[in-house]
Image 1: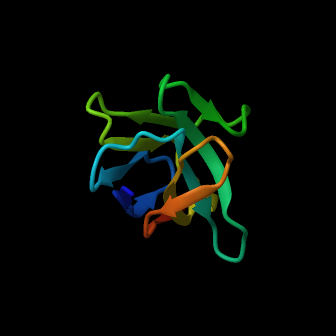
Image 2: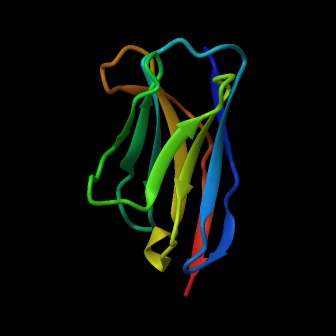
Amino acid sequence: QVQLAESGGGMKQAGDSLTLSCSIVGGAFSGYAVAWFRQAPGKDRSLLATILWSSGRTVIVDSREDRVNISRDSAKTTVYLHVKNLRPEDTATYYCASDRDGSAHFGSWGQGTQVTVSS
């Protein structure tokens, strides 16, 4: 089973843009989807965006959220989360996770990367 490793977090200012990386290590991923989640302090983990592995189709969970995008590299070894115009409420730990079979059960998770946005 592949493992996922997030990177790219850190301290940001409101209005900045951010790209987080989710590296797929230990082999090629052949499952259904890879997704990005975030968990703000004191809140539940929430799904932000998904990329369907076979087609590359992307799904942004909140269609009103035009600040968020998901992509992957051509080698299919890294999945990116792009967030523009950061706000303090984007402060959270960001995780990537994989769904092997389309069941919406994300069985493999990275360790998370912390993003802190100051005003």
